[in-house]
Image 1 (cartoon, helix red, strand yellow):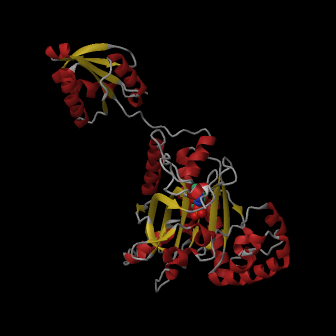
Image 2: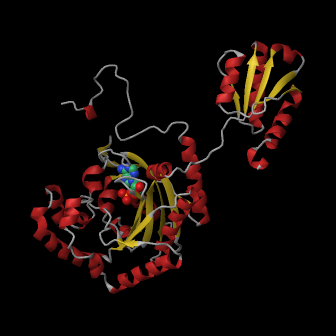
Image 3: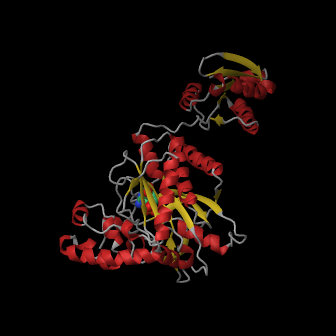
Length: 442
Ligand code: AMP
């Protein structure tokens, strides 16, 4: 059967469109993304994080083991396929497991160093597309591998908040929890399972199914009915072992020292199996139901799940770029970027066209962003295009001008024009652009 989603390639000459849940980033948006990524990179550098780029696809086992078989991600959201060699391959649904895999594989911690790494890139999850939720989306994330110091947990939070501050996004709520150690979580899980079995008949069927496989996940369901029914569930914070409790206290103290407000949310278990101790989420009031800007926590057991003989402590977060940009838009904060084209080159006649084509390339060599009109339309149309591009200057010449080795230089803001000898035009343009740089004039 052919549903709208899996219409196959046999339906003739239909216009092919991007796959549901994915989208194109068009010019106009890409500039804002560049500015955004620049800010992320600058802030990461300020905090001492270095970039890592891992492949977009990995062995399926990496995620099955690290994230856990009974999570939504592994259970139903991964893009998994068999390649020509019959290997099971998965498009990465998240960045932490690949980073830890790479860290172990390349023995980045060989000298006992603490590594601070960040990544930016696309992630893939086959979720039901809705506002704030797509199938290819983009995250940036930071990881500190090699220490279980609570300062590391807090540093990742401060780093993310510094990025929000840099963007001018100042409304957010930090939700904080501790899942304790794996052992204390097991004890809690048992208690919680008993409680949930007692109220199971009041839970929707698909939530009921989680009681046996992943009872903690029942708690972070957003459904009102589930929240009401489980309101009296035992709290994970009552099950923390002494070391985890002490660690959690230190995390809270460090946040308070920095004046960072937080809400303790014992239901914040996060969907992934690898978390222990600190978990956190930073939510925005400017988004609808998909309101998490970033989620993170500590994953000290992940290295072992991926085959490391030793326990590798680590902590980090992943943040959704689309969500942050949406929140910025709602908050009315614009990412400013400078118009690209500085000089538009307008030519009339064949000989002029040839000279100015060469000149345009020389201007680029001198670092000037230059637009050569590739259509052979009228001067008027070329000037209209120059204005549309928001160019600061136009260089205009016809065959006659070039017989005199001259061009006309026009300031598109003031409308002033002057004749400039062609051999002087590059230094004059460079000087003029420096002179009219709005930033310098402020
Ligand atoms: P998670 O690893 O699920 O906690 O995701 C971390 C962050 O990535 C979330 O807080 C969101 O901002 C973003 N995110 C997760 N899933 C999606 C999705 N399907 N579409 C868009 N953004 C997402």
